Length: 340
Image (tube, rainbow, N blue to C red; front, side, top):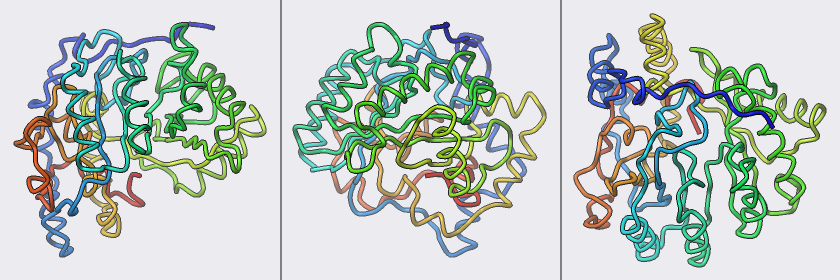
């Protein structure tokens, strides 16, 4: 199978926007109203988390076998950040002590973490529902061919990125060869029962636009994806979720360098939908960085908008109904139908 074409990460390029502080400053200088002010105008502010943590999302590292053009993590093969054993242990301890029902594992490619299998098994033994944010191509690498069967054995929910149901759209965003490898993995998952009615093995796809516009309505896209993937490749899945491209990291650099940043941000602001606020992930999720720092969400993590606590000293009262840190990038989660 052909190797995936890789682009340099912002870090490898020495790009100014590899620095989260530079991203914060660029976003803060945009001619758009503060997100908190927009919430207040609709009587929805301040944005607060709920009374308990429903999802513990852990970013186990920035290393990835892909370097996608839209990646908000700036992940890639050259990234060396990896969650150390003591932070992994603290995450699993918190999962048990607070009886958090869902563990959401992300990266980078989270499967590259040396303790990935152990993390999954431990969480499943606690009775947690485990979600893996999978790029699909990881399972085509020689050392990771076991992953589809491991996922099925552990009943892991797969949430997999697929920008388009065709090679042109997918490879253009994620690298040459990604689509064919993704299809190969999806077929393996289907053969094990993933996406099949009644199997209990959940295979959900995430689609994000390939350009600076909002995604099509989720229901419309899901019907098209379902038809085209079934007819062309024999692929079935459970749900398709739409995700608005987040104006941070590589996508922020693309928008800025192509002169489209202001227009894109105005599109997000003009598309603000107040009904999305109640379901924002930051209200029920605690995001943990590879180094144990805590965040309201994975996007805040990449902008270094940390909470004062860490995984080793946080308490439940610290987090219950806390004020969520917001900035201009938050408009991406509340535009139109919102990002799931």
